[in-house]
Amino acid sequence: MIENVFEGVLWGSRWAILLAVIFSLILALGVLLVTTIDAIGLVGQMLSYFDLSLTEEVRSKMRLETIADVVGIVDGYLIASILIIFSLGIYELFLNKINKAEGSEFASRLLLIRSLDDLKDRLANMILLILIVKFFQQALNTKFTNAIEVLYLAVGVLFVAGALFLSARAKSPKIAKVEEK
Image 1 (cartoon, rainbow, N blue to C red):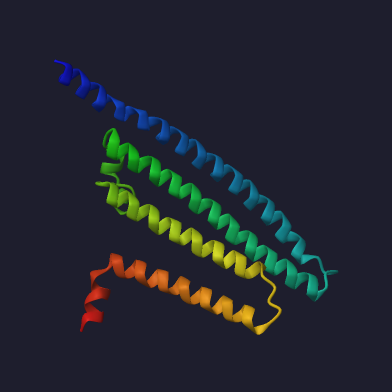
Image 2: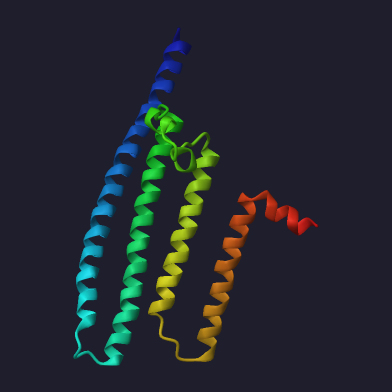
């Protein structure tokens, strides 16, 4: 009898994960809202680019700042996406199937999580994408003063390319088979 009660309590404790689901969704919506407000503000800033009195030096600086801001906005939307995928994934793993997702034609490409490994893989790919976006944003904001700094950037780009290659290789057995031949 004690074992049955304990197992019942233990099994019911999985509902505590609902807090993570709820707060991940709240955070995702918050990040979406903040990022959208930033995007609207950026559109307003972009309109000032058409001011004919601007010098080419100011335009060039505005271009770089705009690209960096766009990358930051993409980063914000990616973070919101991660939080939503995380929420859906842990809900499906711990609590219940999402019936609406089962009937959707695109859910299988994105949301149907069957194991912790599925969730981990999807989150890892999104995090890799965010790191690449952040690297790009930092590279745009960096002022290079000598050749060694440009070499460091090239090494960084090489590492990013390597991470993308290894990520694609892990997902696709075709790449691994081509290399074995």
